Each structure stands twice: as structure tokens, then as C-alpha cells.
Image (cartoon, rainbow, N blue to C red; front, top):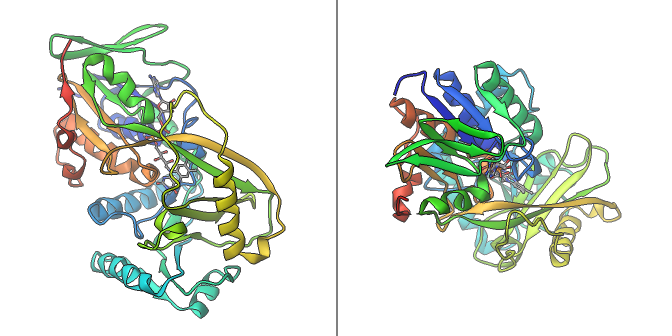
Length: 385
Ligand SMILES: Cc1cc2nc3c(=O)[nH]c(=O)nc-3n(C[C@H](O)[C@H](O)[C@H](O)COP(=O)(O)OP(=O)(O)OC[C@H]3O[C@@H](n4cnc5c(N)ncnc54)[C@H](O)[C@@H]3O)c2cc1C
């Protein structure tokens, strides 16, 4: 394929914006579509922690590459998305969990990162308001935060400056094929011809590909978050629970951080309390048990925040795969690629997805190993129409 080939990227979340940028920078003619505004789905609702710590053993090299790319983007776009290398603390409540934390720390240090175990004095030096009854914590100074809206907008603007075209409020209704080749995308305003189509549609991806006879195991999962009214500077970095077999907050998921505007942003999903899958088109209310669990965790860790008022809550749908890894690469007819299945930490991974897809389309060497994300691991069922 020559560099003038026309590519349509469907979905302008962080993954689609990063992919459009990577393709436009390689000289391809790119059109990026979104059914709504850019970043208006899960990407804009993200807590956007770029955290390698206790994240994924299999993907550690790719995650390290991604964090470096984010830091390069911060330099290149001169702070446009408010990148802040604030570090991440993972608190430990049970003595039995210290060895699990040590396992992750050893893995990460062997890969060149600086994770370490902290005693309580050290925790309080790093995060003085974290005075709740914890035992110890692990600490990763490498982890960072970005502003999610500004990140999508910055990458999108850079893609447009590199020659891409963006069409908002323009849903891809159908991916068109002739024989075993992709030929374009149908939208309400007509057809866009293309010999390559990349679907970065988050939880909508499987639904868009299903009419083509392509079955991808991506299901939507409810992701919820709460915010308090603005507070004076209280929480310096990202606070989460260290991984553990003990259940409760350690066996589930928790993340607490403070926004630049001062709001405390937080969510806790206890082990076994995961929300049922739903339709990404019907955004529901937050669950009451989620509010109770999240507020309980926040007040236990940060007793000084006990009397702070809640300001707002929100829910979006993440895209979940059976092994918690993205599906990235070619599927079905020639010219069709997919980059979806974020599993709740896709913000960090966006540059990896963009690199894998852009290098595959360009036929150039990929800077990261794409094999953990190969669509073939699920043997996607393809019945061409
Ligand atoms: C509360 C919360 C906290 C989070 N915290 C973190 C975190 O700390 N770190 C982290 O790495 N990740 C985090 N995540 C997850 C992260 O935000 C997602 O993994 C990431 O944003 C996924 O990006 P995406 O581009 O794949 O999906 P999306 O943002 O869902 O983008 C898909 C886009 O495709 C568009 N689209 C769909 N169908 C069509 C169609 N037919 N035609 C045109 N457009 C279409 C949609 O409108 C949407 O804009 C969090 C998420 C939430 C909700």
C-alpha cells in the first residue's frame, strides 16, 4: 500500500486519536470519525493514570514503552494535557499481602523501574493525608496523571495538523466490502471510500463488526466514579489497593486522586462486586452499593475527608475481553483492523495500540511486541458476507 492510501479510523476516543496521529505522521490520508464528540465516551470519563505499577506482568515491556511515549508527548506538546509524574501508592492492609507487593516490586525493578515497599513513616512523607489504619504500602514514583479531555483533544489536533480529517457526530453505520476487501464506510452523510478501516470503537466495536460475520469477545462493563466538592491540596498522587487474595477492596479495584480543580475523584469496586455487563447505548445511574463502598474506602484511608460533600457521579462503559488484554490487529477481510478491549486501563495503552496498528498498515518494524494482543488468540469467527 502506498502512502496516499485512504484510511478511515472509526472512534475518536484516546485510542482512535492516537492511531489517527500515528497514521497521519506516516503519511497516510486519514479520516477519523466519531458518532459523537471526540473523547465523549469512556476516554473523557477516565481517571487517566499512566501507571505501570501492579498492572500487567505479561504487558510490562509494552507498558514501559507507553509511559515513555506519554512523557515524550508531554515534551512535544509542551504540557498541553497537564502530564504530572505524581507517583502511585498501593496500600496494604494484610501482612500476607506484603509478599505479593514484593513480587511486583521485584518484577518492575528488574525491568528498570523504581518501585519500592514503604513503611508507615515513608507513606506519610509521600502522602501526608493518608493516615488511615494501613500496614504498609508499595510505591511507584514513575506513574503519572494526565487530563483525559485535553489528552484526546491534543492528539486529535496533532493528527489534523499532520493532515488527518476529523468528522464529529458522524457514526459509521456499516463497513463496506467487495469480495474479501474493505472498500469504505457508510455514514448518514454518504459513503467514504477507503481501502483500510481501523475500528477503535471501544465497547461498540463488536456490534459494528457483527453484521460482517466477525465475532469478537468484547463486552461492555459499567465503570463508575465519584467526585467531591473542591478541596485544598490534600492528595498528591494516585492511591490504590495493593493486589491481594484477601478479597474486599484488595481483591477488587480502588483508585483515589485529586483533580487540578481540587475535587477528590475516587472509585472502589469490591471483590465480587463487579457490575453486570450492559449496553453502551444505555448509560445508567451509579449503583448505591458502589457509592457506599467507595465512600467507606475514602473515609477510612483519609479520615480528614470524612465531612466532605459529594458533588457528582458518572458512569461509562468500558470494553472487556476474556483475558483483560486489547485485541489489536487485522481481522476478517483484507484492510480491516481493530484496536479495542480496554479492560479499564486503556488510557495508558493508547500509544501501544497506535504503534501496532500504524506499523502493521505501513509494513514497518513495530517498536513493541504485538503478540499479546493478536486477534487470532480468540480465533475470531469470520463468515464473510
Ligand atoms: C472512571 C474511569 C477511570 C479510569 N481510569 C483509568 C486510568 O486511571 N488509567 C487508564 O489507563 N485507563 C483508565 N480508564 C479506562 C480508559 O479511560 C479507557 O480504557 C480508554 O479511555 C478507552 O479508550 P477507547 O478509545 O478504546 O474507547 P472510547 O473512549 O470508548 O472511544 C470509542 C469511541 O468510538 C466512538 N464510536 C463507537 N461506535 C462508533 C461508530 N459506529 N461510529 C463512529 N464512532 C463510534 C465512540 O463515540 C467513542 O468516542 C478509566 C475509565 C473510567 C470510566
